[in-house]
Image (cartoon, rainbow, N blue to C red; front, side, top):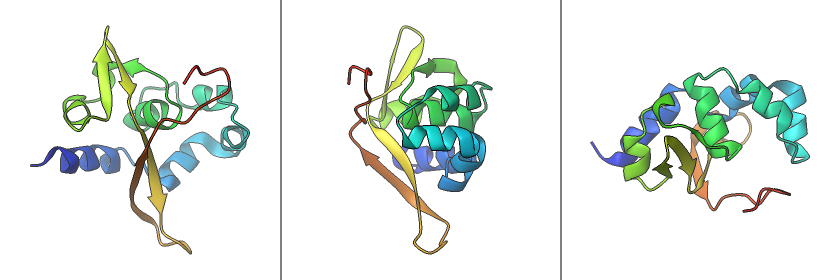
Length: 120
């Protein structure tokens, strides 16, 4: 199976979708993210579920423990790097929703987002 199909299975299996992330974060953390404030989202994603880990890794751009989710497909696809027991995103992976409530349609992969004080 191609690495990208394995990545997609990991993301979809964790419900890393617009709806899944929206439900995970809730209104307070979601609103704070719209203002580039990540602390409420960090609190909302501290449980360690696959969805929380993927949200931290790709949406919040926070390193996660390498053993928190299967890393091999993510590394092989060039989406993350592993160092010192941590996994860091090399690219931003955002779920994409269809227009007019069309539901989950895929993912957008782009450069990492520059955050105030983030150093990137």
